[in-house]
Image (tube, rainbow, N blue to C red; front, side):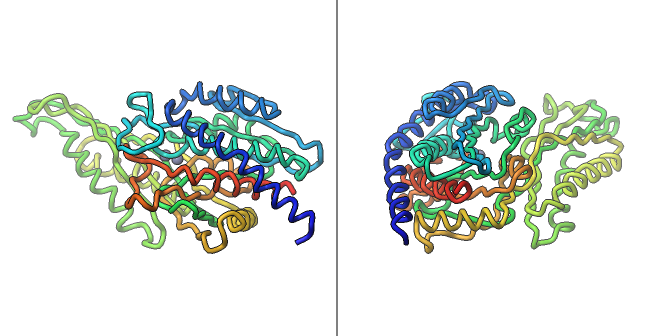
Length: 397
Ligand SMILES: [Zn+2]
Ligand SMILES: [Zn+2]
């Protein structure tokens, strides 16, 4: 290693170290004050203020509560986006022994997005300190409404991705032990779509079903029939999921309802499967309902494509992670059937979305993301900062 490289190495470590305390504090502040999707007003204020303080040019209200912040190095080069999602979930936080707890009843950072914002601000702080070592432009992208897959597209429509050449982002990942990073070229998270099916029958007396068309019975058949899309039509080598998360019908035990409504979600790892799953849910629901004399109306809701990292950026992130935690602590990620609308940014510019281990190894089995008992190990935060900083320097070097 040359003297210059040794010097940069020492400076990276020093800059990351310098952010440590503030990153942890920021994560705790956000954890105590979680905000639901599309309501991230205080979080947006915090990131706007911090970014401006670091010398970034801030644009607030991007596609709603989104915030972008740009910093130009003054030297020609690519534009790199660091994307962090900001929203929390409608969950009552439970569990003991946590360093910070939600102070908003019924709202909780149960997916680690508080950490994502803190890590992005930490990486930005370190990169400002290393400003003479990179060229091009850095764009921080603080995205609302990831949990309802409705944050990225409005930001993109409002210009957040314009001029961006590369995208980097992390998801803190509790099932992965702290001190490990998982990276993968290609698909890491599946597509995530939502849909509704309304079954229109003909209501009547619970004691005289032959004079009605019972939408509840039809709904039961539809739920079972659409599962055969996974078990009979989808390759076992192509992971896919159809889940009906909500069923509503009826008003009383002895009344046959007029209609019923199902809300569900589809997930697929293979991008070509995404459209097929939705299409088949619609077709089967319609055909089953009509077999019983009812009518099904299928409506597609919000969704996002699979999260795909390009090979070159995944390689570069792998190197950054290895320099941070050691090669033997970097895993090849296994694709997961959760979704993330960072996918929409990654459709517009190549990049890499990767997992930073945040599971407390000493606490045994880790409560899953979106659980009321979810908690991250804060020791994961500097790992996220350092990996992002190293990867950013590589892109902008
Ligand atoms: Zn989540
Ligand atoms: Zn998440």
